[in-house]
Length: 342
Length: 287
Image: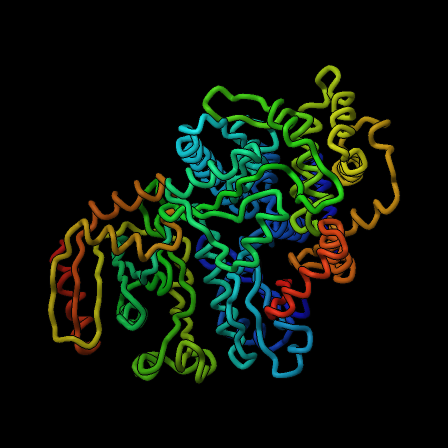
């Protein structure tokens, strides 16, 4: 199996699994595990006839995703209790948000850290409240700590000492050093209250955040899963009256039109997602590199396309930092003997 | 991957890909009597790869990779490639299994009833299970006991026994030479040699049994038997389980049911003859 296309092909239309031969099942399941999409695949294949051996693998993934979901929602509740005295709504981001809002994107999804969004002027209060409730710093290096506070969109990560779970407290959705400046106040103002002290971003902002996370931040590691989130959201929200118009206006407001447009095209290309033609038409160069990177894994679960991966790794630094800051950052890391973990 | 090997052991199947021929040849010899995965689809994939591209030829070292990986896992020398494969397969089960509650325990069966033995490395649980497997019991596994939460049954996982240091000579007194794997000297776990289980263990790999007795053996002390309180058994088994937490409520229910249903004893023994005698006498007390 040359790349992860077989997984995308079956995720988009699970009935296709009936055509798979054993070695294709093996490749697909292995790739899904490596891309953290096995739980999503299990959800998509639920109720369809599958070979007995594959059913065992999928059952494990289903149980694992169920445990992730329960733990993620509990962790959200713990954060809510810690922040309640501040009168702050806990705005959930990414996986926990999808699970809490009962969205299709949350079905079977593996969920790791808890990501929340708070207003930047309340960041110090939130930090103090979390520290008082048992969360602790995990970045002991003063340079890393200072870097996060000056340049990042989130506090340095905190881990709860009793439950060993990580929380990322964001005040916006992209690093402060990125070329784009999303409107964090608007994200918070238009968040949707879930009625239990928790909130999620508006549908349009959720899509925009996922697109920004995929394309304006990072080297596309785990990108296929992030793209799958976007596919699920576009299919779930796309039917609503005026969604695509609101998505376009909102993307412009956050200065992320090109990223959202590219995310739509990649979704359509990889998962056959129905998308708005006009919004998807903004700046089309280089899509094939992205597709190649997103699918760069073989049937043994090994990473392929080493050069392309390297190029996206370098790009991830370039897009997140102005050149002078990047040079300074690399010099500091080099002096400390830091090597990127590949 | 250059070479590949696959095998079914009890309720799960493995696929091992290797950048070198030797580890796969060793696996094929050691697992000669085992079935292949049904439908050709494995539960877990393992990859034995050079840690860095040039380490394929230059001082070859095997990185342990697969569906589940431990960040910072130390690579193993190619001479110990078989050990790397075995460790990698164990790692997949330890980190990936969710259907069964995993106990780091050896197990043997007689008359449909299962004896579980758990303890730290060096307690002798592997050697004891292998010995009992040669003396009228059905060997079920020396590494993981698989408890099905819904039924409380123990399922076999009869992989080759990993014998360490003096245990190798002990077993050579009881078992024909052709069932032993290659000598692996000076591994991170000491001198090591694998022992293929008896044919009866492989033939019965799909037949579960009901747990009837739990022992905490300890080698190197004068003969002694002590009851162990339920609360202590519970805590020790949570520590002996690699997926107790991941199973959540199912894990808790399965473990409490096991602790309440199965009598537990700590046994100390100075030599294997004493241990076998203790096991037989405790077992006959059950009836």
